[in-house]
Length: 176
Image (tube, rainbow, N blue to C red; front, side, top):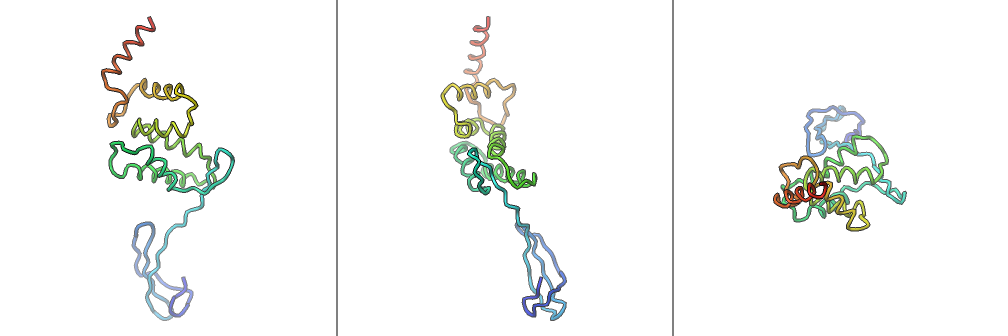
């Protein structure tokens, strides 16, 4: 780092502190003894998303957030949950260290997290992401969720408990 006062190419660090997304360093020039501050942060490597039609597009967290927010709209989720979900996905993508990633992988990551977070948001996202051709495919996805062995206790049920019990009895009658 060149001194901003005398342009000498060397300085020593007097103090370092973590700030938001980087490090703040207080420096002193080894030539003129002037003090100045620098802010350093990691510059993320550009991640490109390979779309279904083979186009490449730079990863955009805002697009990810928009899709998740639409799916979670009017759902009883704690404040900050959607942002945390997007941050987690972005961090996982960064940790993979790849320059390109298929959009399918990102979609699957969102689906898995929404499935554990909120079934309705999951179905909303799946209906767009998987582009269900007809109501039968959507019904099959809902049936898979309803018949899952254990439901996370933090979620609202897809159906009232009495409806689930009634459906189980009907299935037993049909099987006999």
